[in-house]
Image (cartoon, rainbow, N blue to C red; front, side):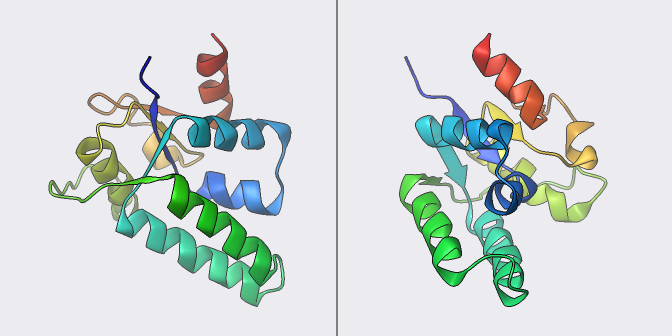
Amino acid sequence: MNKPRIILDTNILVSYMLKPSAGISQVVDTALGGQLLLSQDTFDELRNVVERFVNRGFISVRESSELLGSLVEAAEWIKILEHLQACRDPKDNKFLELAINGNAEYLVSGDKDLLELHPFKQTKILSAKDFINEMDA
């Protein structure tokens, strides 16, 4: 059986880092057990957000390095060849581009601008709760 191809929005990963609830932890564990997809743009956004949290003292440099390192190692890196302007918030287009270019089955997000696009072509855009329910079904 093929591993599901999964994208985690920055807000999911930041929630995991700052306040890892059981649900968010299950989402991240499922993504790491499947095929997590990253692009340079999505990783750069995450790294920038994480650096801000380190600078504000919310997380340690060690914690941020461990998370970013584990994602880098686990992910399949996707080169973005097809660019899109499909989301109301242009900053979210990078996740849709990753979905299309990486043939993602799932994009897990807490962002309303992305969630309202579900489904987007072949990608299901789900909240953390809906993703867990689908994986458990």
